[in-house]
Every structure is written in C-alpha cells, then in structure tokens.
Image 1 (cartoon, helix red, strand yellow):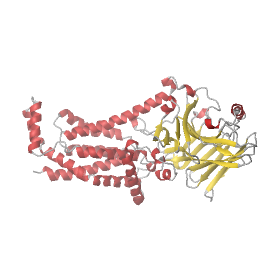
Image 2 (image 1 turned 60 degrees about the horizontal axis):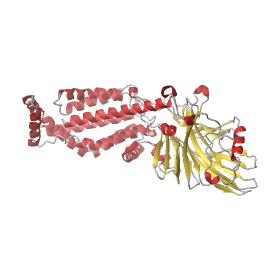
Image 3 (image 1 turned 180 degrees about the horizontal axis):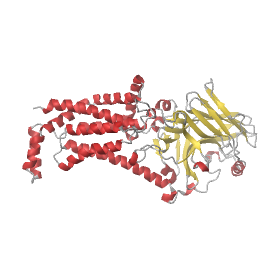
Image 4 (image 1 turned 180 degrees about the vertical axis):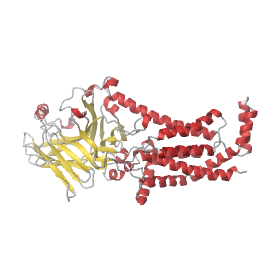
Length: 563
C-alpha cells in the first residue's frame, strides 16, 4: 500500500510542479503587460538618447568637470547610421554605424525549425515599430568625465558595408570616429571561423595635448522575450528567460525582468560576466583586460514595452599620454548554449547558463555521459536510449529490492483482503493485524518506496538535461521523429508510454482502498494527456525507462511471487 501511495504522491507532485511553473510564467507575463498590470516601474519612462549610457566611475571625476556640455553635444549630433552586413560560416550579423551596435544575429546552423532549414534562427534583432519594436542588441563604448567619448550614440564612419568570411580564419570590421579634440578612435569587431565569440576592441590615438583617461562598458538591451515552445494546456516550457551575472562573491545569479524593474543592480567584482538568456541560446559580454568591473542593470524605453539592460563597465581607468596610443578590449559571445563552446570562452562558470537548476551537480555528469555515448553512436535518440539503459543498470540493485518487496506484497494481497473484510468496521484493528502479517512474513511495507526515492533526483536531472540541452534541438532520431526537442507529431510515443504505465499498474500490488485503486488506474491516462505536448526526447526517455522497469519487475515478480 505504501508503494502505491508514494507513487501517487510523486505523480501528483510532478503535476503540481508543472502547473506551478505555468503559473509563474503567467504572472511574469501579467506584470510585463501594462494593459493587465496597469503600471511599470517609473525608471522605464521619459527615455532619451543618452539615458542608457552608463555614468563613468567616480574615480575619473577629478580630471575636469566639463563633461555635461560635451555629453550633450555628442547626443545632439547623433543621426541615423548605415547597416554593415557580416557573414561567417556560423552567423550572419548586422552592425549599425550609429553607435556601433550589434543589432542582428542570425544563427546559420540553427534553423527556426526542421521544416524550414533555410530560415536561420534570429537571436538578436532590432525591429521597427511596425514589427512590434522587439529589441535585443549589444551595445558598447568608452566613457569618461573630461572629453567626448565614443559611446553607443555617436555616429561612426566605415569604408566597407559588406563582409564575407572567405578562406581566412578571422575577419575584422572597422569603424572610426574622431572627437572634436582630435582623439581618433577605431572600433573593431573581429569574427572568427567556427566561433560564436566576437572580439570588440577600441583603438585610441590620443592626438590631443593632454592625457586620455577613460573606461569601457558593454551592455545588452532587450525587450522582454516570451518563451517559445509549449506544453499544451500546461503552458510554456519551464525554461528561464532573462538576465544572469557571475561574480566572485555570489557566483552565478539570475536577474530576471522583475528584478530589473524593482531595483538597479550595482555590483563590483574582480571577474565576472553579464548575459541575457533564453531557451537554448545566450548572449554574454565577457570583460577582459581589467582587474575590476561594475555590473549594472536598468530599464528604459516606452512604458508599454520597456527595454531591459544588463551590462558592465571597468572601474580602473585606462590612461594614454598625449601623443600616445592604446587599446581597450572586450569580448561578446552570441550563440547556442553548446557546452563545449561555452567551456572554450575562458569565462568562469559560463556553462551555468545551461540552466539545470539546483540539480546541476547531478545533471552535468549525466549530460557529459550522454555526449560521450552520442560520440559513439552519432544519434541523440539512441544516445538517450543507451543512457537510460545504463542508468537503469546502475540502479538495478535498488530496483530489484523495490520489486522484490512489491512481489512479496502482491503475494499477501489475498490475505490482506480477508483481513479487510474481517475488520471492515474496525480500521485500527485492521492496521494492527496487517502489521502483524508483515512482521510474520518478514515484509517491509516501505521496502518498495525507499529505493524509488533514491532514484528520483537522477530521473528529474535527466528531465532537465533533455529539456535544456541545445545539442538535442532539432536532433533527428528515426522515422517520423526528426526533432527530439518538439512533441511527437503523431503522438505515438505518448500512447506507448501510457500503455506501459497501464502494464506497470497490473504488475504492482493492487491497492486495498477502492478510491486509491481508481486514482492509480486513472494516472496512466492523465499522464498520457500531459505527455502529448512534451518534447519527444523526454517522452522517449520515459518510454524506455518504463519498458525496462516492466522487464525488471516481471522477472523479479516471477522469481519471488511463487511460495
């Protein structure tokens, strides 16, 4: 009886978790939509061109105090720029000479769907008002307190507007701007073959008669992204959209849209990064070349569609003497959350943007094992199957103990039914006699539960691995299953899974309580409906896991049920 009760609670718990995740998604959307919520934070109003340029650190304030007039002249002179197109083997990017912003990134190796292989997924974009004004751009620049600086509002010039990566390993896109005091700046984007990392360097030629003192910044600006993908009536996929940072003090930390509405981030760290995350993809500024950074956030733009910013700025000034030259470096990663590539970025814990939640210590080794198996079979579907087989083999001793206990319990069912009829009006006496029966037959009623409980964290970790890993996005398996990250189009796997749960029901000891019996019988049908909209890779895992459990349970039941 305890086993059925435990399985019932586990099943209902899973359903409640999914419903809770859907409720959180709804609340987030409600708070983001002023027509529902009524207001947004006051710092999202009265936006202007210079509002989202971060202030220079206080340590530079002693240089001069004429910055206010200079900053105003930079904004006043700003005008519409031209678009530079850059195509590499992995991405197509667009850079606006107005500010040198990266305003569009298309991922050429990641189509929108398997049905549209020539339509690349657009990770970053800057739409006009007629397209809903969705924004996701990367901005960067130099700031200070004693002169004009090339922030993301100045108009750069360029000599070339079409770039194509050919046989070379990298490609430089150069923008230039000269301040009124004669200081010449070059902003250089370097794209590399087989890489989603973009180097962003500022070269400064100080042609003035006084030292140049400045700081670098980089920020990601984004309107709120609504999670794509659905789990049917359960709502959107339970994947995180929003900002994240890494600092020495707090390590990896999510900064969601509500956090940015409610307060301004202001954290100083010796090393770290800032990022905007969505399901399968990430854009992250990776500061380099300094020993100290300030991470910040903000909200600006229209009240109905605010723009959220997460960024960094250096806090140690770069000083270039009069007549000298210098370089300020930064790096940007824009692409899929492929863990091998994230490890290559030399940015501590960037791999944590693959969000496995609190089960990361278990999920990460499982993903590593899954990739190793994939390396041998070259098919993610078969890799999932073999990983499931391996996990079941590892836990076989625990499963055997559980099924052995259930087999003994099933053998006692007739005697328990007799006791229930005998003490139908005395539940306390029935419980006492039932415990005596367990003791005389040396049966532990909890023996079937504990081994299952030990395995639950591993199974939940596998769930997150299969849900969050971009490596499985659009992964082909066989026959009609050409994308393991979307639901089975013909619902074959969910139906098989439901049938396997029915088979497991008949293998388990029948509940004595008639209400509990009806609930347990209904669960396979309920879960089949839920799993109709689950990604096929997840359902494949559950089907294989159930079939292996049935085989194990049938073998052990036959072995121990007979007297």
